Image (tube, rainbow over all chains, first blue to last red; front, top):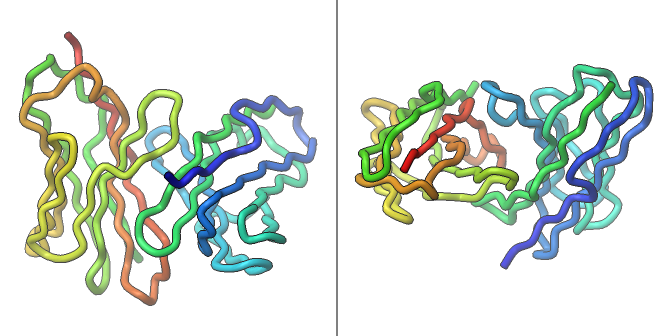
Length: 110
Length: 114
C-alpha cells in the first residue's frame, strides 16, 4: 500500500514564526503536491513538483515556498506565518492518475 | 480554466436512505473525473473514477457516471450506512496539457443518522 506521511497532525504557531511541514511518500512517485483545505473551498493547490529540485506554483502560492531535495520528500515552508494561514494542509503523491493523500496537518496561527 | 461545482452540504439522512450528491464541471478537452472521500480525522482517499464519457465508476456501493453531454458526474448510493458519514469531493484531472493536477469541488459533508 502507498503510504504518505506528514510530520505533524497538529501545530500551533504564533504570527511571524517560521513553519516547516514535511511530507514523505514510500512509493517512488515522481509527482508530489501540497494543498490547503478550508471549509466550503475544497482543496486548493499551493505548489507541486514533478521531479527532484523541480517545483511549480499552484493556484495559491503566495506566502509559501517548497523544497524537494529528495524524491520521497516534499516540504512546505511558511516563512512568516499569518493568521490567514490557519488551515488544514494536505500532501499528496502520484505517479500518474490517482493521488494518494497523507492524513493532513491542522495548523493554527495565533 | 477548469472548475468543479458540487452541491453544498451538509446532507443529513437516515440509514438505508438513497444518497445523491450532484457534481458538474467545466473543462477543456477530455478530463478524467474522480470522487474522493474524507472520513473524520483522515486524509482523502479515492472512492471511484471514470476516464471517458459514459464510463461508470463504482466502489463500496457508490456509483457515478461520466456524462459529457451534461458535464456531470453525480455520486449515488442506494442505501447508506452510518459509516458513510464523511466529506465527499468531486475532482477532475485535465488533459495532458494540464499535467497531473486535480481541480476539486468545495466538498459535501454527509451525515447519516441511525
